[in-house]
Length: 141
Image (cartoon, rainbow, N blue to C red; front, side, top):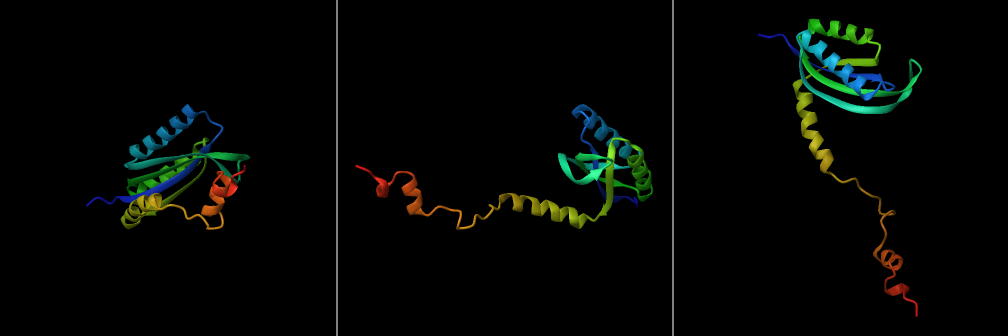
């Protein structure tokens, strides 16, 4: 029986890097995970975002979320690599359960389909809409 577990790592790259350098860093990290017995399930690039507080005097970061399977003994080695990589500002690795992954997959399409409710005070009433469009109430002779 294989002793592999499911992990997710979210890391923040220096946003001052060029797009090609960011892609190279993401590829390098993914390759390192695979070299140490990991299997990458998915990589989500969240893009450049402003951070809540500065890290190493940087205010913006490029966020990447990676889900992978790996033996538990390789996770400290992967984390050490992320610490030593100068392009990585911060990282966090968590162990996931399969139930959580299934829950996320089921929840994502539902949240995308539901419209955001608009308060009734913002929606124009039918009388107000016809007045603003030059309806019957607003005719001038």
